[in-house]
Length: 253
Image (cartoon, rainbow, N blue to C red; front, side):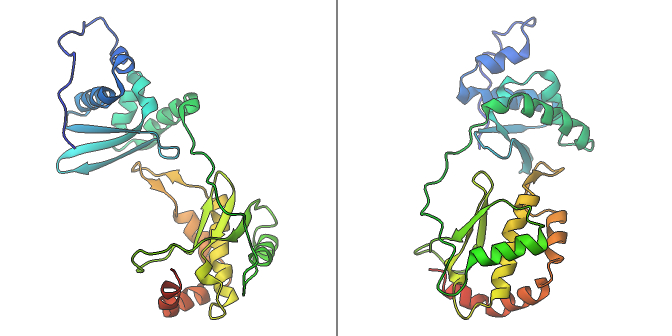
């Protein structure tokens, strides 16, 4: 990412509020203006990429001596207090600055554009071997006190691609939908392993993604992992996965 020259700096009067620059700048230049302001506050090189992300409003990382921010475009309207909070969020007192940022996001949540619902095939929980509705019902009753509200079904196979990994399940927060990879619908895959995968996806409703103190999106935080390990069949399922991952990868496509 190259740092572009800051436009209209010489023409700006001292009496004009800096937020006016952010509001009036074209979208392509707003990130440059933000980068210049944050660089001034932090006294180090800063680059800004504006996003329309529906989940992560603020993130940053250091790359080759530059502090690189990814910011939702709502921050082009930010006033001085919020800009200082963004700068301070990279330091030690992240929680205090994070509260300012969170409040700003709440006030501007109408600017967050959520993706339209995915057009998926109808959910089909009954497979050749495993019935996901039955597994989900038992887990919900025995492990979650029937607190989970989601639909579940088998996903579709992904043709092609390198078969070195497999996403065995996914939870869509907006739709409250769980899809399990059809590679698990095999007589060689034991029910207790499918139960572990379904349990994992159900946990996502209890522990949704959050932004950690480093500004990164955290999907499987410490609380999530601790709850996952408390599942009665956790060790047994992980041992089976380790010994039979080759089978799942073979059935992936």
